[in-house]
Amino acid sequence: MNISQEERDAVYKTIFSRRDVRREFKPDPIPNDVLERVLLAAHHAPSVGFMQPWDFILVTKPESKSQIKQGFLQAHAEATELFEGERQTQYKSLKLEGIEEAPLGICITCDRSRTGSVVLGRTAKPEMDLFSAVCAVQNLWLAARAENMGVGWVSIVHDKVIRDTLNIPESIDIIAYLCVGYVETFHDTPDLERAGWLPRRDVSSAVHYESWQEPESHEPESHEPE
Ligand SMILES: Cc1cc2c(cc1C)N(C[C@H](O)[C@H](O)[C@H](O)COP(=O)(O)O)c1[nH]c(=O)[nH]c(=O)c1N2
Image (cartoon, rainbow, N blue to C red; front, top):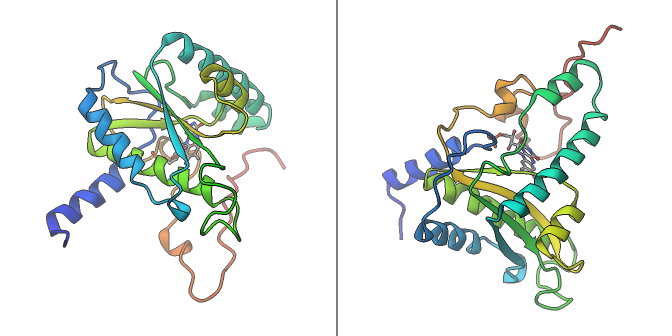
């Protein structure tokens, strides 16, 4: 089966216009058939040894969202202390989640023991099952964009909060908490780029031939007095 030029263009359009969404969520509910398509796309991600270690926990209850939001606020306050000076002020000004605004939360987990202890492809690199679950996240993110829905990944929450809120046993790893919903607008560039947090690297600085090379520094310019 060949991909036509139009189909190819649609794939690239989806990739380049996908955004992490934090603020523009509309409350409109997500129709079941749309949600099913997005979850099916996530479920068709590649996985090490085909172990399909993921599960998707759908979160719609305001009480659950509120608990997770509280967890975010706590972790965000802790994070704020790790930045200094202007960078701290800038960090505090960023909107970094849409937990309560998004109509749907999706927690993606990884069951590392799903298909037994020896997994084809995981023997030399034990973290491959976790990476597989991240592939599911990306499939979901892109499929949602193709459905004109936004997704925001919230990792500024300690696992314990999500575990307690969603009754996730200790044996299951938490990969991602995603905020999902229709959006007002998709920006052309990442929020963090527009806010001046970091620029997009030139792709040529990320591509190396034959051996690894030290990339350019990505330390933000210091605005602190010397
Ligand atoms: C593993 C992981 C974890 C997070 C993110 C991403 C990924 C991959 N991102 C989103 C991130 O900031 C965003 O992808 C980049 O800024 C690039 O923007 P676009 O995704 O292209 O819009 C993110 N954003 C945010 O506002 N709060 C968060 O906690 C996180 N956590």
